[in-house]
Image 1 (cartoon, helix red, strand yellow):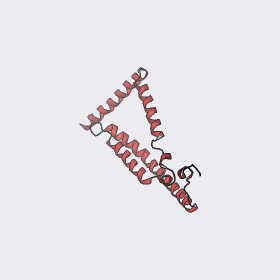
Image 2: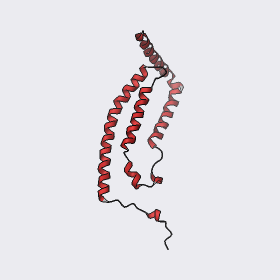
Image 3: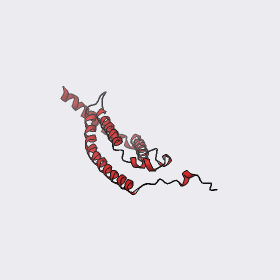
Length: 141
């Protein structure tokens, strides 16, 4: 009697037509996702500038609205949906390696920015931002 479980050796049978369909749909989704990114890049940069120029209680709302639209469209595109049919849940990544990398880089940059080496640069940046904010308030009057 064989002691290996059926799940260890189980392979999902995929027909050639399903494979071709999934490959074509994946290519289409990649194209749509890329076009969405091409639109979101300049829109998010403009949203950031608008948010920086409108300080106050609702500062940043434009950026986060854009991020929310990006998340919604990402879920609608569902780029890697075909993998859900063929990969066991255990093999599907539960965390984003890119998000972890961004978190690590952000932590490093914050530590460096808060160090004494960058205090003069930080002060100049804060003065420049305050100057921009002062000009905005003068033009509103």
